[in-house]
Length: 145
Image (cartoon, rainbow, N blue to C red; front, top):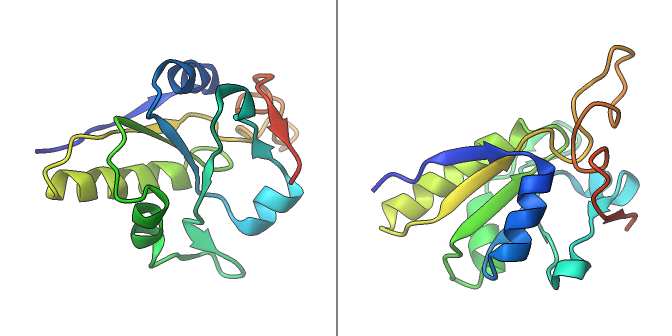
């Protein structure tokens, strides 16, 4: 069994989280990003994002306990969909592939989805984030921690 990773934008993510009761979001950014940049606010949907660092500061080494930590956060459950978010969609894509492979290896079918543009979005012409795409730029709920 191979679980494929798909990609959708922030609004499609919001809609799917709203329509799919067991769908979850995993924010794979760093603690510093959660603290200083903000978090998606899913309270209107009765949900909270799962926070699990894909890489850790200062050197951005991959978090070797990422998969174990996520398994604990999911309490052993296999949701139908897991949406992965980072700053711009790069780290989260790697995380989505790792998790999809792990579920497939256990014979579980879980749709792993990368959120295009992530939380802050791509760089604009001035090399600033937050103006092109991403969760915040889409006008979706977010909060400072």
